[in-house]
Image 1: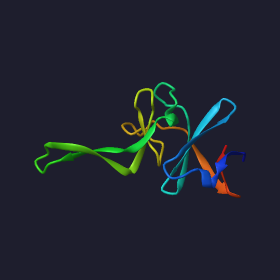
Image 2: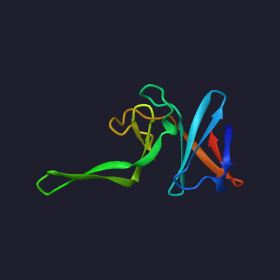
Image 3: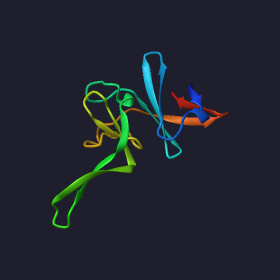
Length: 121
């Protein structure tokens, strides 16, 4: 199995993303809560650079006991990758498209060894 070097482990802090390239293939590597996630930088909607968008918590609606709308907030335990082209959202932990889990970003395994972060190809 081939491994693509991303960066030294100390360079990627929680909340960071690093885009790496292998030929024409681009992969976004994220670090969140000490875990690494890697996805092809290709939105399933129209091929936009999904991993170049923002990372934010899942939007949650706050409702009163009678189910009337109060406000919105973010669930930072369920971060979403937001494609910069059209706002399509993907769950960071699974790569699933938030509104349609049958669609997903292509995921890659990440290895950490010898002080470096690597994507397994």
